[in-house]
Length: 233
Image 1 (tube, rainbow, N blue to C red):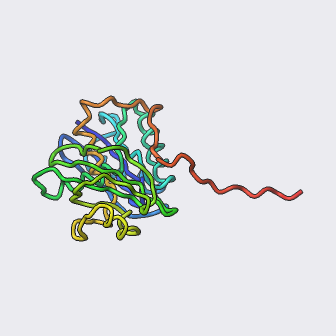
Image 2: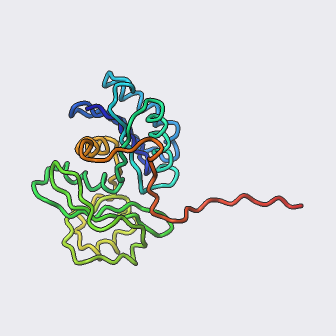
Image 3: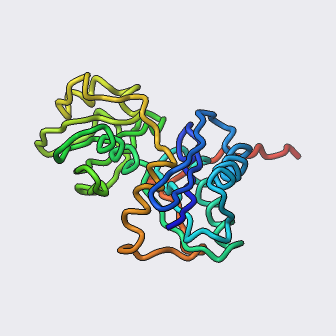
C-alpha cells in the first residue's frame, strides 16, 4: 500500500508517505506558513520514497479539528491532489492523531487518553480515546469544543493527557481528569506520519471518500470572520 498523508491542522505542518509499512516524513512547526510549505514537503517525501502521485493508492489528511485556516488548507490541498490523480481520501481526526502518539510510546495495554487542542477564545477541542498498541484509537463519546472550566466528564481514570490544550488550561484539566503532570505532553502536535499509519490500519475496512466528499471538521458551528469596513458615503 502506498499513501500520501498531509497534516496542517495546528501550528505543525507535515507530509508523509507510507509505503508497505515504511514511513517517510517532513515535519516543521511553522504557524501561518502551511500554504507555502505543504506542497514542497509532499514532493520531498514522494521523491525520497521514489514514487509518483500516480502510483499512490490514496491520500490521508488531517480533517480537524484545529486552526480554521490550517484545517481548510489540509482539506483543500488533499482534495486537489485527489482530484488531479483520481485518488480516494480518508480523513483522520487531529485529536485521534494525538491519542495515537501514546500507543507509539511503548505501552503494553489499553490507555485512557484525554486529547486537547487549544481552540483559542478560552476553549479547547477535546476527545476521550481508548488507545491500545497497534490499534486505531477508539473515540469514547464525541469530540467537542468547550471551555476548560465548563468541561463535564464522567468518572474516568485517565492515563494520559496530550496536546496544546494542556499548555493553557493545565490546572482545570488536571482537576477534571486527575491526570498526573508527568503523564501529560502539552507540546504534542498532530503529525502526518501518524495520519499515514492510522489510515493504513483502517484503509481496507473503511468507506473511502471521493474528493468532492472530503469535509473539514471545525466543531465550532460559527467560524468568526473579520468583517470588512463599510465605506463611508
